[in-house]
Image (tube, rainbow, N blue to C red; front, top):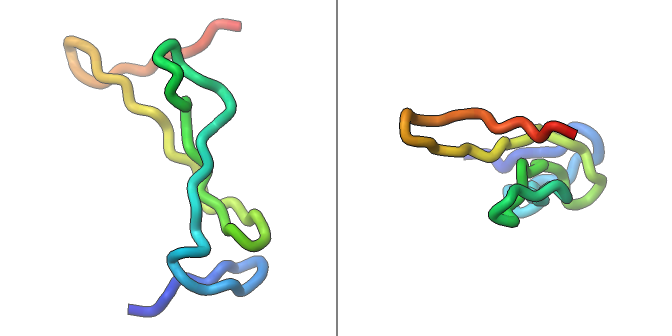
Length: 65
């Protein structure tokens, strides 16, 4: 399998893709989401949201600020 390559800076390798937790935290002090990005140039590949499981299955909790 070929190593992934950043479309912005051409850095290659799976070790160049990192995930950084969001600054926003839940009541349990866990990040709301993670940002997947290139370690070299910061190109963002996407975000991964936090899953919350309730009694009836997954549910979305929205902060009302």
